[in-house]
Image 1 (cartoon, rainbow, N blue to C red):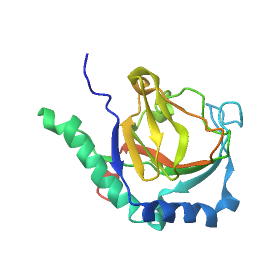
Image 2 (image 1 turned 90 degrees about the horizontal axis):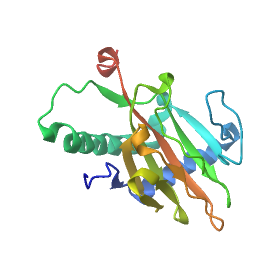
Image 3 (image 1 turned 45 degrees about the horizontal axis):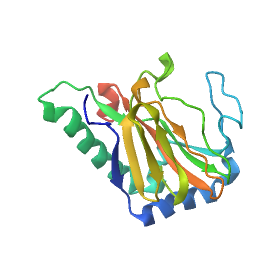
Image 4 (image 1 turned 90 degrees about the vertical axis):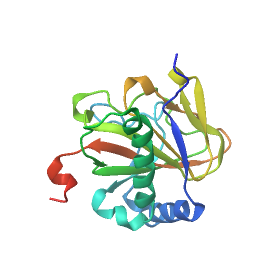
Length: 195
């Protein structure tokens, strides 16, 4: 058995987290109740959140976050792909959308899921999630790895998108929780060149 969970944690400065929270606050009127499933629906027993979807054209509004994320992804890919002697990995890029999610006290995403479980998500290579708050008892559980990451402000978690990394949010009954999350996708060569 490999000792690797393939879940890596990186650090983001609190000022960057605060900028993302500020962006959410300024645009909260555009947020919607969290949806899930193949035919998106609201089911608060499975996901109780307020979600703000952020299109890639607005990613610069939360700089330097995506610059930092680029470095983290490079380090992750070097460690698990290139340092093995492999080459030929197709181009990777940010997903067209990301989400800032606010969970109330007692809210969360306790439904077990992974990020690549149907054809429409087959381009997802990695998942990233930045904790925007310190939320005791409100981390993320990865059952296959037998681990739970703690919700510590500034911790960015990066992991594979497949069924090997099923996960669920741990619900805090005493604190609110906020995260910023999205995907690293396999992209076309044309898009990687800015076309």
